[in-house]
Image 1 (cartoon, rainbow, N blue to C red):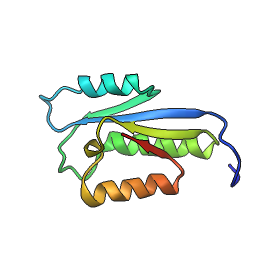
Image 2: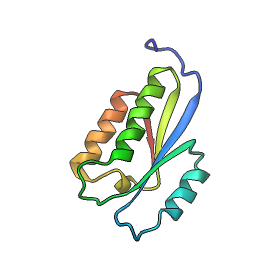
Image 3: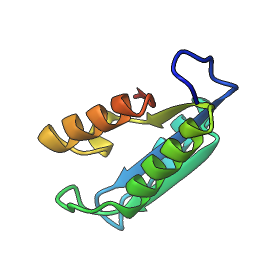
Image 4: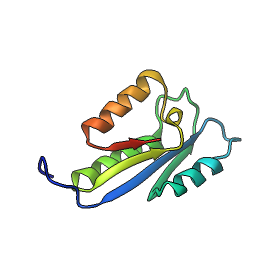
Length: 104
């Protein structure tokens, strides 16, 4: 996509995460559906985990779609689902650099 050109559509991808296998994703999934998410990536993985395969897959797909000229927004129920502290700041910068929106 060339600089300054308008996107040719918009896709809302989303990510849901629970910290333990016993926690339910239902409330997050309902909220993301109401927000118009096209595709939901979800996983049950500890907040302390340094690798989150489904989040990485969502960001990778968002980048691929954005590079094709379509606007992309990554939607999460709460920002803490993405990470905390420096992890969250780094992800936000990565998304911004790729011209991918982030919505909580």
